[in-house]
Length: 334
Length: 89
Length: 95
Image 1: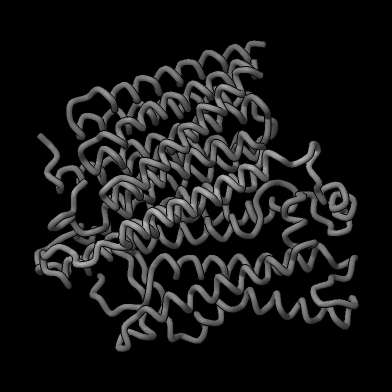
Image 2 (image 1 turned 90 degrees about the horizontal axis):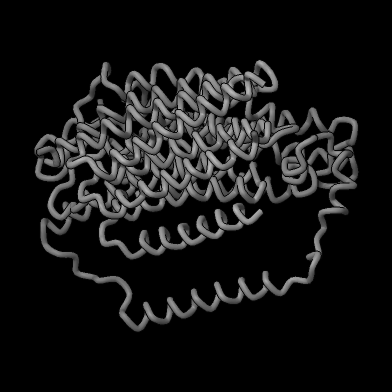
């Protein structure tokens, strides 16, 4: 296993080097590209650690959706900065040098403490895994990760989905007053807001992006359904499925082939909230039916989990699309 | 044979890592994007080889997801307006 | 036995194309010619590796997944090619 060790060491060294380079480079765009590359390499690292569920999440979020999020955010920030300062250099230079040194020392201290703690764990490390493994068959799922997420730690999952929904509210609150309730836009634009010259790519319903957006989404939806169903016994599950659906929706939006419904529409808002709401309802029903909040009657465990997962997929996918598309805006978009 | 396939997977990853030099160095934005695209394709190829070596279906699922999502970063960049003043690569 | 030989041989060819693609990205003079290396050589490499792995698939579902991966990679490269070319030309990188 020398070859494996060499590979792992090289991978780790490369990850650290890439991270350091991304942080220190001057251009925001270059840093984002470095971060995307870092995400792809992390997928390889997670597979080496035999954690395919984490690798799946990392692949969809960091390498796929995260890249789009950061790049569109950087494009928007760059535009607004250019618009407000009109070519003059930015006034504030960020934290002062002393603050930066203090932050660096604090980060190094936290990192070193984590390394020390992990390296000083007794062998074998104390873990709840054997205890959990005994109890998992009662949840009815074959995949231990999803069984823990939706069985043993369902409370965490419920709270996470509520947090996602709160994040959507946060993003919506960034819209201007007159644009509140309209729909976000993330498609091709014909006019740039900087100086009025035409920028970006003119809408091209026959262009390469549109071709991709017409061919891939049907397959993507099928793959999302497969990931959700397969998550019961193999890596996958609700979140990977939702991320795939969100990615397909984003593809259609980026091609200009569709628009997000207006955020003031009741049915759209209901879609976003349906998942956490259903989860909460099931949790409350656990009180009379099984004796505790979030308890499932054992015979119904798997069907309940399936229903919850389906609702969560729809809500989380909608929320992800909204988080990446940004606040509602009335900017022109074809 | 699985050892051979795993060795090839490592070779593919090493190759794509070498291409990262272009991401660090490439003077143009398109160079860096190209390098990341290559990295994604390399990861897909390595995952295919690992799936062939170990028979784990999860590697195939991962490769499928990566293959479908790999073009998103480039699409997002292509849609953004051209870098104006100060938009260095 | 024959299938194993096929797998190793075709996968080796695929890896060869991959190395060629990376060599192209590193050595070609300008972005547009590097684009050729990325989209063509690497996609061919992935296609050959996918073809090599198909006999190893345990179930028809796995074989279908492998073909879908190959199709998605081809579509992705077909889309990324013109887009990167536009980005390069728009930024004035072609020479």
